[in-house]
Length: 242
Ligand code: BTN
Image (cartoon, rainbow, N blue to C red; front, side, top):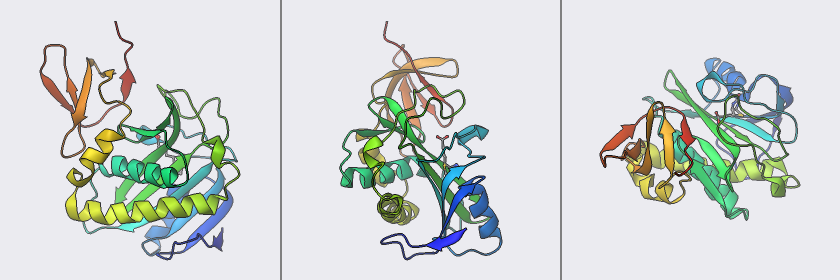
């Protein structure tokens, strides 16, 4: 790994590796050896990229893979992955992509296809946020994913450090706001960016319509009998109407 510069990121060192097992795993090793907050690992490709729930994150070259380290005296709530998704979307919107949405709890969606994902992992007062964004076409990206893979091809020619710099800026600001104010501060913004809002979905054995996010980032589903159910974790599948 070599140390590189990311425009606008002065909070910690940034290391780039053309090929790595997983940026999040390597960052954890650095963190356990005392890496400072703000340390970033960025890789050209990953041989053992990980998604949520232990799934494999397919990571060929041409896409963006990076992880950043934050410190926190207490565990950061899982709802931060939605907030981090919102930060990624804001950064890419600033760079000209206006059609992005977030799919609870951690997917970045462009025109109905998954183009990125976020993995937040807490350990001993530290948080690693790992972000993967597809820029090149993908046949397959994460095991058992309910969404077809898409890509942000318009960013292929943009230097990776520029995109990562924009994302880190938004993410860092939102991390500090989240720590102070919690999910509620972001709730409305994220409801407006949510791909699932008002759609019929299935989660485990429940089918219903997505009504909102709760104040702690839980998904609120309205069941056919009009009652509301809060979903705190799980995978959401779209249900065709009818
Ligand atoms: C998901 O959608 O399940 C989350 C995917 C997160 C992938 C990123 S790529 C950079 C970082 N390193 C990993 O091994 N995973 C995350």
